[in-house]
Every structure is written in C-alpha cells, then in structure tokens.
Length: 371
Length: 153
Image 1 (cartoon, rainbow over the protein chains, first blue to last red):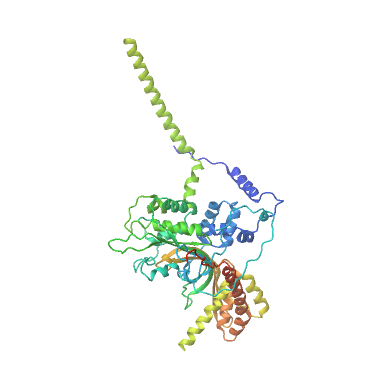
Image 2: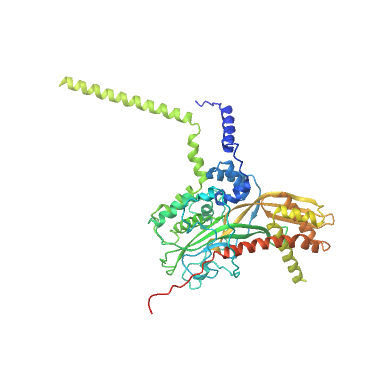
C-alpha cells in the first residue's frame, strides 16, 4: 500500500527564512554588493561561470552570495537560471590566436613570438598569508611598460610547420557540432561533445583525473605547449544583418597540451595534443581539461584503455557536479516508505535466520542427548 | 559601388562593435549630452536570451560548444523609417534600446556623422584607452631572458 504523507510546510518556510538570516549574517557587518564580488572574488565568479556554463559575471556573483559561497550550489543556481532564457543561436567560433592576451606562457619554447608574459599569476608567490591585506592596506598600481604590439600565434602553429605535431582536431566535413544541452549523452561520443562536457565539468574531478594520468594511470608525458588567458571577440550570424553581429568580448583560458608521439601504422611518430578551453581565468581547469581530453583520445590513437581517465563513459558521466550533487544529495530526502519496506524485509530475514538457528540448536541438543 | 557598400557595412559593424563593448551608463551619459533623438518604435525586445559560445578543437580545428552567454538585443524603427538592431553581451535592456536607436540613426545619412562624432568616437576612445592600459600593464610582466656567462673559454 502506498500512503501519501503531507507535512513540514511551516518547518520548510521557517528553515528558508533562517537560511536568509544566516546568509546575511551579523547585521553590523556591511552586506556584500555584487560588484565587490565581481571585482574581488573574480576567480570564484569565473569558476561559477565555467561550470555553470553561463558567461555572466553579475549573475555568477549573485549565485555566489545566494549560495553563501558554496560553489556547487552557486553553479546549480546558474544552471537552473539558463533554462529560463530563449536561445538566439551559436556564435562563430572564437579566434584565440587574436586574443587580447593578459597572460601567456609556454613550457616548451623559451623564445616564441610574443614572448612569455606572466600576467596576474599566483606562480612564484611564496604562498604566505598577507596580514597587510587583512588590515586593508592600499595596493600599488601596476607597472606599465610600453611594448610592441606583437602578434602571438598559438604555439601549435609553430611546431606545425615541421609536421612534428598533429594538426588541430578535425571532424568529418559534414559533422554538425553536438550539443549536450540539446541531446542526451550517448557513448561513444565525438571529441567535440566530450570537450563541451569537459569545459563545464567539475574542476576538482578533472584535476584529480589529470593528476592520475601524471602518476602513471594512462601516462602520456604532457608538456604545456601553451597556456593563454585573455579576451576574445564574440560574433553571431543573424538573419537580419548582412554581417556577423559583434556581441562584445569574453575572457577565456586556453591550454595546448603537447604529448607523447608514438605514431601508428597510419600516422608517423609525432607529438599528439590535448586541448582545454574554459570561461574566465582558470588555468588549472584548462590544463586538467587538456590532460583529460588527451587521455580520452586513447582509442583514437590506438592506446590500451587501462585507466579511469581514459574511460569516456566513466569520465563524462561523472564530470558534471550538478548531476553528481543532485544524485548524492537526494539521499537525504525522505525515503521513509523505501526504508520501511527494507526494514520489513530485514525483520523477516532476521526472523527466518533466528528460526533456523533455533532449529539447528534444538537438533544439536537432541543429538547430544542421544549420544 | 560594391566597394563602397562593403566599406559602409564594415563601418556600421565597427560602430555596433563599439556600442556592444561600451558600458551601459557611459552610452546613456553621452546620449543625454548629445542631443540625438531617442524617439523610436520598438519592433522587438529589448529581450535577453542566450548564445552558445563556440571554440575550435586545438584552437583552429572543428568547432565545438563551450558554454552559453547572456545577450540582450533590440530592434527599433525611427519615425523616418530606418530600422536599427543591437546585440550585446549581458542583460542591460536600456543599453540594447539605445544601441539599436544608434544603429538606426547611423543608417540615416542626416545623422551618421553626429552618431559617429558624439557617441561612437568618445566610446571608442574610452575602450581604446582601457585596452592600451591593460596592454602595457601586461607588457611589464613579459619575461626578458638573459644568457649567463658560462665558465668555459
């Protein structure tokens, strides 16, 4: 028998009101404004945009504050919001070679056109907590150095001239880019769809998988050919205009990972590649994505699939933290009826078990008495 | 004729790009001081929606979908008949409306020079200055490598 149970409305309403109070915290402390979050917690905002799969700084900042800083909850809020908006179309692919670069480093070439540009990086900091920051000290303005406006071709273009590195990934001519927001996941999947899933995937999950490939689970000897961060222009083809309409620019992080060069019967020995492209400034995520992209190409490159990071269904099915948290967290919702059914089953099994025990015991006693 | 048409399209696109990049409050401020007419019939929007941002595998290969971005667009018609469009990242409806009116006025030979001088040029100047500032600040973090003198003769 199924019994519907109602209740808890008042408790739920009061819980939400309590949540709003705790979110606001001590009223003597000024409330955060969204522009403060956008400006001063910029990389947290970028993570919410990347994994929420929606580029909108203010919305991401609102999500962060509404979620009390719980990033996965914030990502969930952003994902839910996107479903309320109509779609205007697909932009033309961004040209990362024309990026206004704010950071660009290569671990494979010291002297490359455009040079090594560090930008606002945590690298080479001493990771010492700064008490002056806690005291709200004034910050110096950045140094400016007039430099030539030099082109910064992607590093992959440099190696490509010698034919020692594989080309940018191509798909068959008539291939339409897949869209996981439109069609359910199906395995095996094409690389373009995998990249879409990885770009919105959980940073921690992809980081751990990328790390596992370095530790020997699907080892493929990666080098960072290049990481670049900066703004790229967006353009959209629309029927009402005879040219692609400019939308403005977004900040992205791109990683070109250069990997081992086994070659096969069909391809000569050459460097292979993994690719990462994510919203905002997040080189950890872009690098992890590139490591995973490369590992997931195992089948295509004739490598044995022996590790988790190479298992497409495993990686892609578990990379989405909104799905993951939904399924894990649903366990705390009422399962009273399910549990009652299982409880009844255990009681019955226990009764049968005890009856069997008693029978055995009685038989044993009887046998002993007979001896 | 064809060359002129192409040039005109390129100029219109450049003006739309400037408006799309510019901050909403700066457009509004310049508009208020410009004397440009802001009367127009709204044909569509302003409405906010999504575009799916595409990248290319490896940077230059086959396209793939990266994620979405909010975009607000508007279409207006001036009393003189010109229809103007605007598209811009974000959710600012007032910006979308003004940018669409600016696009419509830009197509009107009587207003083009004024739109360029009073709106597009100062916006572009602000954007260029911000871009140049970022460029030279980034430039100061460029690594200069020095070859150390080695021990051998």
